[in-house]
Amino acid sequence: MYMNNYLFTGSNKFYTFEGLLSSWIQTSITLLTTAMLFYHITRVKSIKTHRTLALFITVTLLLVSIVYLIVSLMNYLPRAKQAIKLCKLEKKCPDSAALDLQRTTVVYGIMVLITIIITLLIGFLVYSTI
Image 1 (spheres, rainbow, N blue to C red):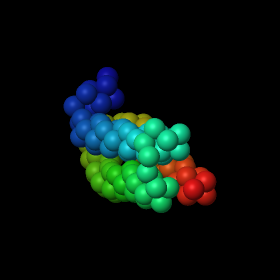
Image 2 (cartoon, rainbow, N blue to C red; image 1 turned 30 degrees about the vertical axis):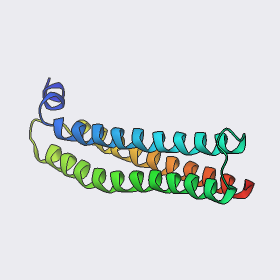
Image 3 (spheres, rainbow, N blue to C red; image 1 turned 135 degrees about the vertical axis):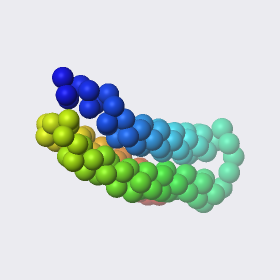
């Protein structure tokens, strides 16, 4: 009963940060998709442009995507830690709820790092094919 009560009231702060992180990840994935699509249409000559310009635009979009991920993670982690700290201090919040919030924070952090690595790999592949 207390767990459900806390998840409904006290951890709304945590889920707000989670929603913001999710939105920034979606923005980053959109930029990644845009970069890959732009690169593809320049390669199949749907858009005629110099290879160096295509590379520059594609890599710039990928770098902006990575910056969004890094900044969103830097904003998410302290806020999530604060919500976890509040949960631990709250008598109505069981330890299992705080542990679940900690696990979620770690999983999201790892997912963002994996996305950054994949984006860097795509950037390297684009750079090496031009």
